[in-house]
Length: 195
Image 1 (cartoon, rainbow, N blue to C red):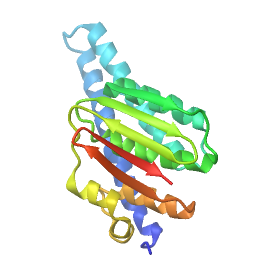
Image 2 (cartoon, helix red, strand yellow):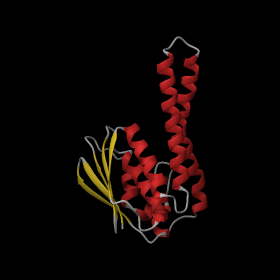
Image 3 (cartoon, rainbow, N blue to C red):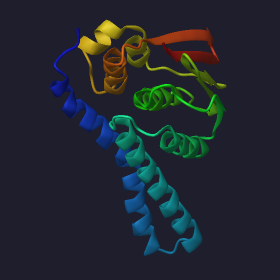
Image 4 (cartoon, one colour):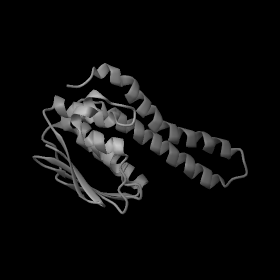
């Protein structure tokens, strides 16, 4: 059903590099500012924040591509990501039936959080089904991304650099005999479910 996954590696690497470019660029800018007449405390704080964002993104990708990643590790990363993005994170349920689902949880969290461009709330419900509920004052999907979430066949057969993470989530779902379902609720709220 899906294209040769080895052909996805360049796109996944492009996504990885794109996500690291911003915090690493900010680190470079902060280092330049150290030599200028800028408040040392402001510069140090900016460097610390950029360093934390880069570390979080590295941890996120390590867990995403780790078989049976620990839920507790994922929770720690997601809590920090939400803090930096001004997103409130709520948990219902404390464990997963299968640790192999952790990368799916991480990926769907990141995909959905990118739509909350002005912050909001993400509620993660762990049970027989895993549900992620997103709510924010502004929910903004890129049309290609929403289409890839809703249309698994296209996502698996025609991935691109914008939708590669979504395609990879559908691929993981197939490997685990799981389906990703998208449920719009209203213009401020939607859910993604692993079932």
